[in-house]
Image (tube, rainbow, N blue to C red; front, side):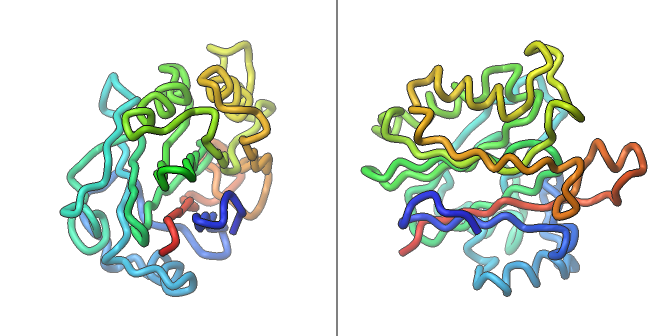
Length: 226
């Protein structure tokens, strides 16, 4: 667990939890025992969880939406038909779930309006200014960027996953630059600098491709406390 604000719970799974549910499939994986054990361990009701379902079969990696009442449980208790790169809730208890393996799971919270966003920031998103666009989307809810609190999950380091479009900077470096460029104070950004490629607590897609780690996904989970 990590501390962002007293209103918000943020949990990052590790390899000890096992490989969790994929972000790419719409249908609930009822046989996914690792995900169910993870939920039970953290007192998360799958009927209140929402999968941030990603797709790489697109040219637009900056799609966002607010979780509707009908979408609660999507990806777990019912299919998740909505594809997005970030989702937002203002409802307490709605657990947003993003499986990742090298990319950043960004949690953005605005205390005055109790608005919470979970955004996927990988190479594709950042090359389309996904950090800035996540903040821009939040302004429609009355969010002031200089009041945002942000947590950036563990991700691949520049030594193992340089972003060539950004002079070989890291995912974390570029995400922070884009957030600051959107008027989020640097003091409000918490970076979990653990390297998913080398840290045994996390899965890594790039390391798995080289045969250095098993394939799998850890997850970042967040919700507003009641």
